[in-house]
Length: 323
Length: 278
Image (tube, rainbow over all chains, first blue to last red; front, side):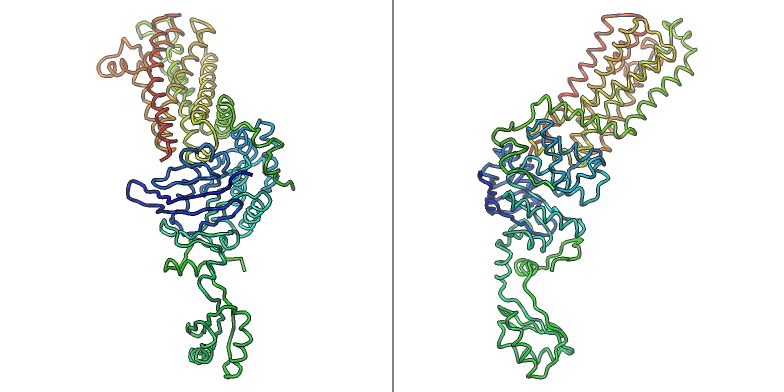
C-alpha cells in the first residue's frame, strides 16, 4: 500500500497577521499509526486539522498527507484522506442513506455502487435500522457515527478525527473507540485523532503529542511520557498528619522521593507494586496504622502538568469510566 | 455484521480503476435533486410565498377589478390580466429566495464544508440550489397562473401567451436567485440572506404596479422608469392584454439579461470568496 504518512514541518497559522493559532508545529505520523493530538480547548488542534485536510492554508511551514502536499496537491489529499470534523457537517433534513450515497458518488462510484457502499457503512456504524429517519432526529452519538461513516465513504487510507467523542455519553464513546481501533487494525488506516480527553489519548493512541497555546510541548508514546516523569507512587493515608510525617522519616530512604500531602504520605519509586510488602512490613514494625494504601501510576494529566505548569482541564469532562 | 471491504477495493472495484470523481453534469443533477429534497421537506419555506402571491391576486381583483374602466387604456379590458403579472413576479422573487436559503442552510449546518472536502466541482455547489430554486419557482408561478385562469383570466395570446409569461417569470427568478445565493455565500447567515431577499421585495411596487406607466407622475415615475421589473411587468401585460409586441417583449428580456449579468457575476465572485482557502 502506498504512503500513509502525515508529516508536518514547522506549521504556523496566523490570523489577521497577529493571532497565532498554531505556532511552529512539527511531527511525523507513521503509516498505520494512531496519533493522538491532545490539548485543551483553543490549543490549536482544530486549526492543525484544518490545515492538514486542505480547508485552510498554512501561513508558514509545510505538510504532506500520504506524500501529497496539502497546499499544492489538495485534490489528491482529499481523495486519500477521510475527515470527520469537530463540527459535524450533516444536513438535518436528509436521511443517512441519501447522505452516504451522495458522498460515495462524489468520489466516483456509480449510483448503484454508492448505494451498496452506503448500506455497508450503515451496517458498520450500526445505523441500518434508522435509515428512514431524518438525520436531525438522531441522537448525538448516532450523528457522530454517521459522520464517521461519511468520512469512510471513499475508503480513505488516512483518517482525521477532530474530537470524535466530545459531548458523547460513555457508551457512545466506547462505540467510537472500538470502531477507531478496528479501522486501524483491520485496514491499517493511519488515524490522526485530536482530543481533549487524556484517557482517550491514553486508550487509543500509539503516540501522543501534547499541544498547548499553539505549540507542541512534548511528544512520545503514552508509556514513555509517563515514564519520563519518573516513578510511580505508593500513597499511604493515616489518621493524623503527624503519623504521616513519622512514616516519612522511617520510609523516605527506600523511595526516590517522599512527600507528605496532608494526612497522606506519597512515596515515589519505580516498581511501586513490588515494594508494597516492604512498606507494609516497615509500617508494622513502627506501629503506625494506615487508613488506606493505594498505588498510583502517573497519568497523562501529570505529564501535562509537568510540561505546561498547569492542570489539564477539559470542559464538560465526562466521568472517567476508564480504570 | 458486515466487515468493511478489502482495503484495496471498494465494492469490488480496485482503487486505481475507480474514476476519481463524478462527471460534472451528474454532480449538478445530484446537487439539484438534493436541494429539491430539502426544499420539499420544509413546506413552511414554500407555502407562504405562494399564499401571499395568490392573496394579492384575490385582493387586487376584488378591490380594483371594477375600477378598470376608469383607467385610460384599460377600458373594457380585464383588470385581472393587468394585475396577474404582479403576482407572478412576486412569486418568482420569493421562489428565488429559496436558492439562497438552500445554500445558506448548508453553510450553517456545516454540510457545505463537508462537500468541499470531496472532489466536487465548486460550481456544482452553486448550480444545484439555483436550478432547484428555478424549478420550484416555476411550479409556484404555474400555480398562480392556474389560480388566475380559474378566476376567469382569458389572455389575448392564448396558451402560448401563458407559456411566455411563465418563461419570463422563471428567467427573472433565476436572475434574482443569483443575488440571493451571493448574499448567502458572502454572509453565511440565514438571517442576512432572508433579509436581503426581503429588501428587494418592494421592487415589485416601485413599478407601474397598479396603473400603467403612462399614468405615473413625480418620483415614482422616475423610480419605475429605472426599475428593470417595470419592463418585465410591461412585457407580461402586453402578452396578456394586447398581443405579441416584439419591442415590448425585447425590452423585458433585455431587463432580465441585464439583471442576470450583474447577479451572476456577483455570484461567481462570491463563490470564489467563500471557497478560497485562506
